[in-house]
Length: 234
Ligand SMILES: C[S@@+](CC[C@H](N)C(=O)[O-])C[C@H]1O[C@@H](n2cnc3c(N)ncnc32)[C@H](O)[C@@H]1O
Ligand SMILES: Nc1nc2[nH]cc(C(=O)O)c2c(=O)[nH]1
Ligand code: SF4
Ligand SMILES: [Mg+2]
Image (cartoon, rainbow, N blue to C red; front, side, top):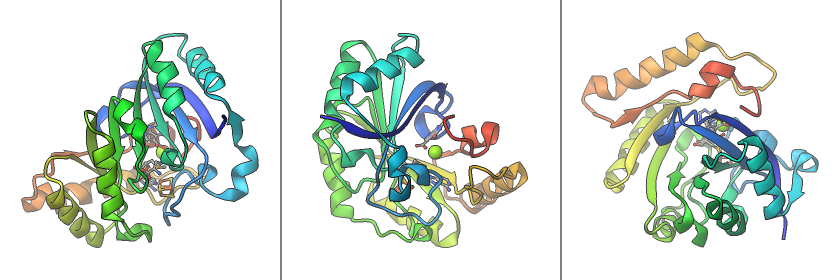
């Protein structure tokens, strides 16, 4: 059995959410059931890039992770695309047998049994600015599948409407640790990002939430974007 893999890279630092700043290797799966208007990883989404994706078996995927990490069993972050399209159970099983732990980033549209084998599941439901709707019953199936695994919710915010939506999502799932992240508009990997615009967006987000009495537990920038811009493989 092979999986479609857009890229495997690292070690780098996790740039987003609950594990921000921690060393990790990324496995980026190819293919997504969504088409967010502002997706920063289109090379793993658009089928025009599918010829660049590799068909790798679980042994080859873990061999690359072990090579990149020098055999040090760190956290492996599975992202994409939507990794839940594919069966990562054999990769996780192999990796865990060698001491690696796994985190996974997904929008919560497809539930998988292997969510319960993760150390952390990051569910990132999409706000209105994405142009995608959220199927909350599918989201709940993800929560059920992740039994025993720590689950956090990370929502990207571009505008006021997204904020209102995030507030409702947070109220719906008060037990999930909430992370808000300002959206990055400059997603072309060949263009530089404006760090001024990133910090302006972060300031806006803090003022509109904490500044107005909504004490969101965590508001974080994309640390890797601050360091490397939209470069791939970091
Ligand atoms: C590229 S996605 C891949 C995983 C999965 N498809 C998802 O969306 O959760 C990884 C994370 O990047 C976030 N993201 C994508 N484009 C972004 C952008 N332009 N600005 C900020 N965050 C973005 C997504 O919301 C998600 O939390
Ligand atoms: N360093 C780094 N941190 C990340 N956190 C989430 C990412 C993703 O694209 O899923 C990402 C990424 O691409 N790079
Ligand atoms: S769900 Fe994730 S990978 Fe898919 S289009 Fe949206 S941000 Fe990109
Ligand atoms: Mg990214």
